[in-house]
Image 1: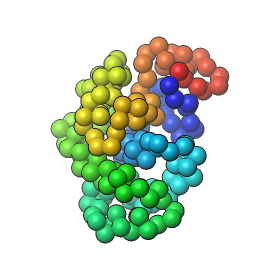
Image 2: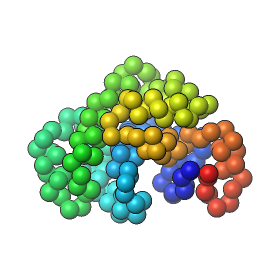
Image 3: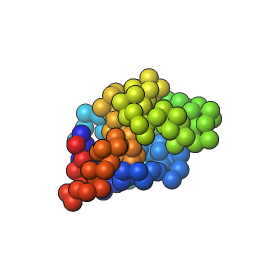
Image 4: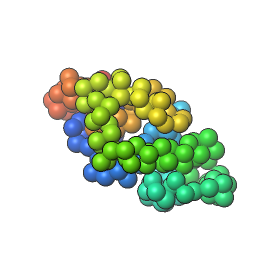
Length: 161
């Protein structure tokens, strides 16, 4: 159960590019254990620090970049999370290389009909991504269980459970 934020995709409205998907994946990694206000307050700077979350550019980041980010008070300075996003860029691009797009990869995981199984597959595929973070990622990218998606369409408050 997640509270829908303004930056999240609506149910059934998915990111339009792999880069948008990767940004949401990175956000899920950085959000784990942190309040949404902490992540939101630094997200613009995080985007700049991670090349707009272009997975090709992020994959090329190295130890010098990690050290630079650890010294930057404008970003979330957590070594494990920074390194996980860089490693996940590699894993993300592998999946995109095996599929027409990351959206197609998620469709192949049956995220449209079995969110739990898709989340488990993401936990296995990506580093520093637990079950809750994987579900948060899927939710933020517009994937919902059918009944929740239908309920979201009827809700005024924008909160899905």
